[in-house]
Image 1 (cartoon, each protein chain N blue to C red):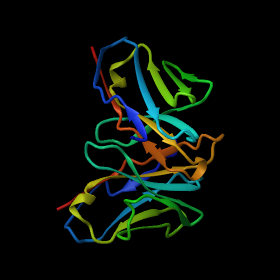
Image 2 (image 1 turned 90 degrees about the horizontal axis):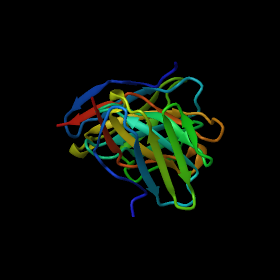
Image 3 (image 1 turned 30 degrees about the horizontal axis):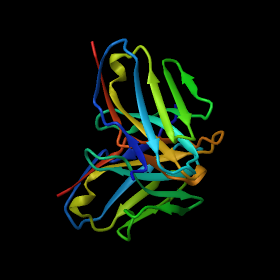
Image 4 (image 1 turned 180 degrees about the vertical axis):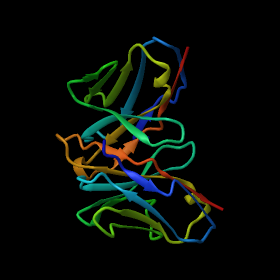
Length: 111
Length: 115
C-alpha cells in the first residue's frame, strides 16, 4: 500500500469554482501533515500545515481526520494562478523526520 | 524573506563522473535535507542532517552518496560515480522546530542530467 495516496487528476475547473482535493496516508502514527504546491519544474512550496482542528488561510481550508487517516484541501473562488500540482505530504517522525510525498493532484484553472 | 539557495541550477555530467551539488540553507535553521524528484515522479527523501551528522537516510542514499556541511553556511550532496538513473531534480530543504509542525522549506533545485 502506498504511503500517501492522492487522486492524480487533472482537475480542470473554471475560474471562481470551488475544488477539493483528498489524500489518504497509511501510517497511523504520522505526526505532521502539510499541503505543498508545485509548479512545473519548480520546487515544492509550502501552502499550509494541517492541524487536527482544521485550519483556514484565506481561500484555502485544510482538514485532517486522524481516525480515517484522511487529509483534504478545499480551494474556494479559484484563480488562474492556482493552477499547479498540489502535494499531500506527511511527516512520520517530527523534527528529524523526512517528508513523505504523494504524487500530487494537478489542478488547471481555466478562464 | 529568507530562502534556501542551490547551485548550480543545471548540471550535465558523464556517467561515472563525480558531482557536487551545493545548498545554502536558511541561516537560523537546524535541520537539513536532500530530496530528489525523477521527471514525472513523486518527490523522494534521500537524507537528513542535524548537528553535523546524518540523522536518517533512505534506501536510495547508498555508498555513492555523501553529504557534508563544510562550513557554517553550505550543505553539499556528493554523488561519487553518477549513473544514468541519477538524472533527476535534486532539492535541498531546511527546517527549524516551529510550534511542532516542522515545516520544511525547499530550494529551487539542481537539475542533474547524466549522459
